[in-house]
Image: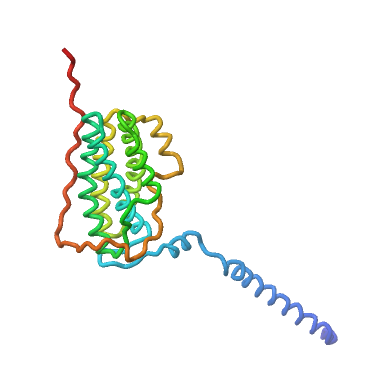
Length: 256
């Protein structure tokens, strides 16, 4: 029979120590990833959580939806008066026609956006913001062909930026009222783009450059007090007429 090795107490304790050390190392390996990521947040999840989406009878309303409704109202607050100036001060039939389209289109669109805002509980501003007031002041001071040019270029740039915003909202909103408003805004803005281009005063090279600039001609509106909401009662089944068809300037006639 092979003799058994002597029992060494120090060897037993040494083996136990190695076992405990191995278990401790395993536990650390499992917990370190949890500690490392406990305070981290996935960027996509953070963006979803930061969006103040609220439930409405017409579908979820996101921050983007709310911002869009406010910007439609703001656009009308300065573009409609600009259209009235064009009707009064424009030196060509094409400029005056563009002014009429702005007045007609934003009169209809403004009624629509106020009804939507009331149904969704969105507070609306009642006057243009500071930047929009400056644009109106510029148009009020301009005269003759200088007015025609400033009117066409400024309004065409503004509508170009809004056009892309409308498309973005329409593509992603889950709210049926916002979708309907985006459809109305899309038709209105496209009509205005066409009549502004028909004036012959749009510099497309300068326009392309300006549209890539970071500044927006329709800035994000400031916070509005809830009491500033326009009290317009929604009308069931109410429809909103689109602006008149695009009409270019009349053909030039040769002088005798």
